[in-house]
Image (tube, rainbow, N blue to C red; front, side, top):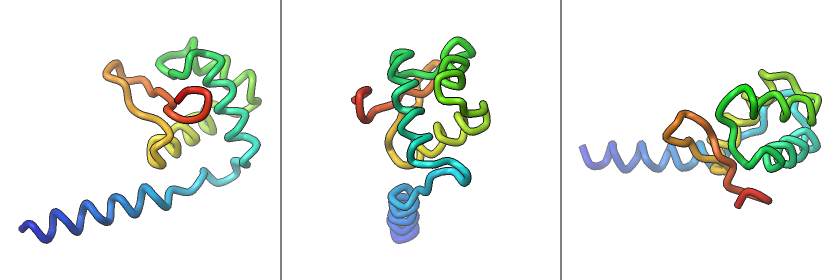
Length: 93
């Protein structure tokens, strides 16, 4: 039983380390996302956070959500107790 737990943990770690950016999103898009999220206080909780990020970056809501999921998977963000997300890298570190 212990072997399965250790193996599963190792696989999860490798998956997170190999997280790929969302398809159709450039490194420039991710940099613009980081800047825009920092401008709203480094957290995305509700509509008042997402709309300015979309406006500043020119990204769709789905692209913003996809980048957010990528940030969570790659360790660049963390979930908040209120259901939001906080960036933990760059200007938001």
